[in-house]
Image (cartoon, rainbow, N blue to C red; front, side, top):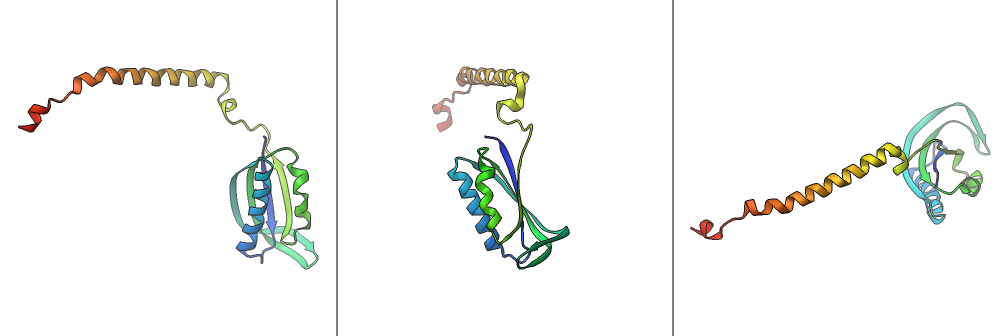
Amino acid sequence: MPPYDCMFLFKPHIGKEAVMDLVVRVGKHVYRRNGVVTDIISLGTVQLGYGVKKLDGRYYQGLLMQMSMMATPEMNKELHYLNKEDRLLRWLLVKQRNTKFGLDLLGDEGRFELSKFSQLSRRDDEDEDDDDEEYEVNLEETVN
């Protein structure tokens, strides 16, 4: 699943409970579609370069939130219900490009280094068994 960033621009007078309610609802929607929410960041109140006109007025500032997730490519179509959400001024879903994770992050050279690490850890486990004889304690000497 590719990683995405979803940006939410809320109306400035919306309370934290209402903001978290919408963020949790989107997170549950992602989870139901076998996705994973990886991070949620609040960027605070931001001044807008132009007024965003809504039915209840024009807004020149808003509360900005970022939700990072890994989801299916159909997620963009499924989130269009947010267009009717009256708490939001704008929302945007951005796919992260050229992001590598897992073994792809290491590349071919890194995979070989990872296999060397596992061989080294096996050698350490074998050495521990040989050292047990050096540290045996005679119980008769400790009682006196």
